[in-house]
Amino acid sequence: MSLQDLIQLVDILGVFVFAISGALVAIQKKMDILGMLVLAVVTAVGGGTLRSILIGDTPIPFLRNPNYLIACIAATLIVFFFHRLLKKLNKPIIIFDAVGLGLFMSLGMTIALGKGLPIWASLLLGIITASFGGVIRDVLSAEIPLIFRKEFYASACLIGGLFYLALSYYQVNQEILIIATALTVFVVRMLGIHYNWSLPRPK
Image (cartoon, rainbow, N blue to C red; front, side):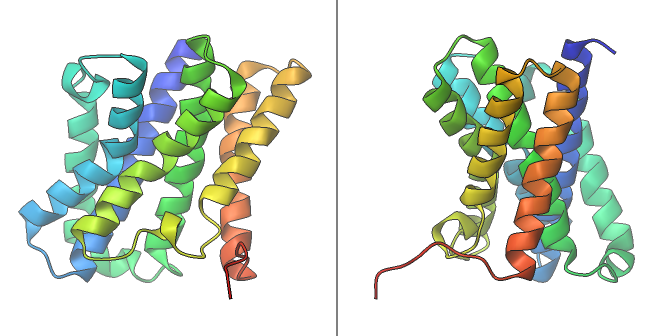
């Protein structure tokens, strides 16, 4: 598999799992199937859309490739028909959100560095790609976005991004780098939830 094929696969997979996360939140908020689809789409492509606008990659990939919308529709239908089964998972929204977070952090950094952007900008764009869709999802569902709470959310992305840069420094194979970074963000996010990690707040 070429690097470009892997990037495309990670992108579609990230869209799919984030769309499931958005559709599950819609179920939780008692929305109908249209509301589910809307929340699935904005969760899945919100971060990537903002990244594409910021780096001048227009029209955005979502409008060029129908596979993104197909993935969102498929995720919505799966949640619509099988949400009772998905609820048997331990905190399904958190699990799918953490998977999407890792995939999109890895993808966002890969794309940004591929455009020749500096390290700090690549980290920022990775975090935007990973978290902005969740911000839109939470705002539309009348919740304070996770990134603005004491949740270990953007911090997990930052740790994953620094891990990505460390692997890049040692010239680790790009395919391994992308997968390892996504897994790192997922694990750190889940550990943060399990151990209730958070950044300090003013008292």
